[in-house]
Image (cartoon, rainbow, N blue to C red; front, side):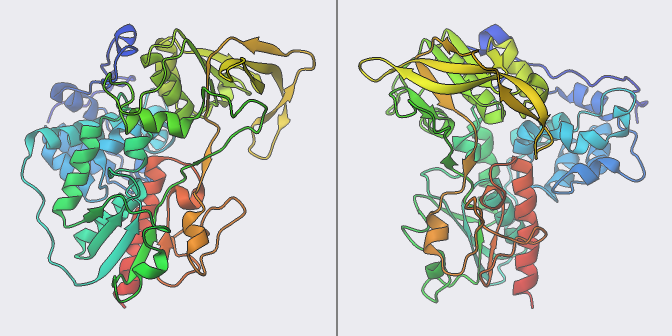
Length: 465
């Protein structure tokens, strides 16, 4: 084996030129080469107590997969990851590794941590490109489980149960499987071909996916558990697709979008293509309200659609931005303008009721609030108007109430989230589990996957008695 790499810095991730990529929807980061992946793997110290694993919601044996890469065995690395993760190519791209596995890496004490996420992506991409054999379908145990939603929580639960021989059917409301992975995350961050490949792997394990099924309309949770359908357990992973608005004047003007609608039309309906059936009107100047990853995605998409100016309007400072640092830096490189410590108070319209501007007030940070972040306080008399013709609201989402309203005995909280046991996902309804954003509200892909994994283990335990 080659000598350890004691460099204090990660190997940089190659990426498209910012000026060029701001004009296309191709993936920004282009990935490590095999040689670079081996070199980065050699930075791992193979710590005896594996501190990085404690930061991984699906408990991947990180030092073991990196050890395979040190030996220049990318397929071996992939197989180690696949023991615990059903979506490694997805996670390698969109997981916030800096606050999870890499946060606990010993190399991060005196330098940069090992680039665990980039190595996971490399191993998964190598497998997709070089291994064409489908995984072997396990023998059926004759037990049927229904999963509602084909996002990261649902797909993870489906994969884990299928590996144990369960007959799993995933019901998806939209016409394509993948949930937020296909409608929410832009192509330039997560190519949809990658998502399809991951889903194809689950189908090879025997997972059935039925699209265009709106549970609560087409069929109810209660009906799925009748002898007609024959499902012995149900896992609800329906996400949090109901957008939140600010409740300020002008939100019903033409040219105001929720980030959910804006991104769905771009990512799922391909509104950026010339022949799109649901095109989005090209805007001259766009204001995106919010500071999370969804806001960054919406802003960067607006730029790619041809807007001359795109503003992020956020009421706190850059230090409090909830978006990943990488996404913020990419947005800045692409020319997104950050209007921080500003809060919208009204969206202005013209005589035809099209957006003509957004009135904001300047903010300053006061004492910390319940979230631990300093509370933004308006500065009296500091109102100003941003000249924009499109406003995108990206301040969060909550679960759609449809399943709650059509399922007997399913407890929810005041935010409409399903109440479920934190460790297992068990709900108040017999033989029904739930996880992901439907329980927590909008969160990360990997946390949803962790919930799906926990629920799969709990369902298996319940059905094995």
